[in-house]
Image 1 (cartoon, one colour):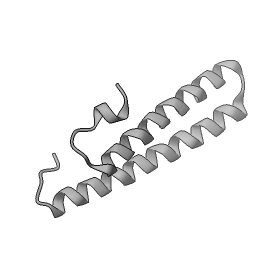
Image 2 (image 1 turned 90 degrees about the vertical axis):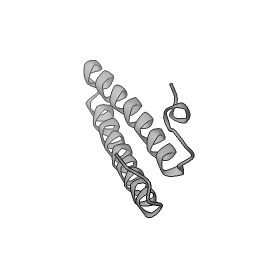
Image 3 (image 1 turned 60 degrees about the horizontal axis):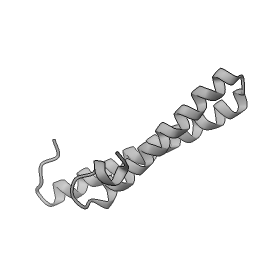
Length: 76
């Protein structure tokens, strides 16, 4: 499943959040593998980029919630 399939409706914020979460998953896997290989600098860098992607996803989800509330739509 890709981010386009996982997001119902046409909310650009939610599509962006899904893409950011996919990037975070990828970067987390790279960090995990790098630790196993002893490449600690690469693991550190990948961990930082994963965290940044999660933060960006949270911001996009917050925007989608605000949009939905402004339109009177449920958010739960």
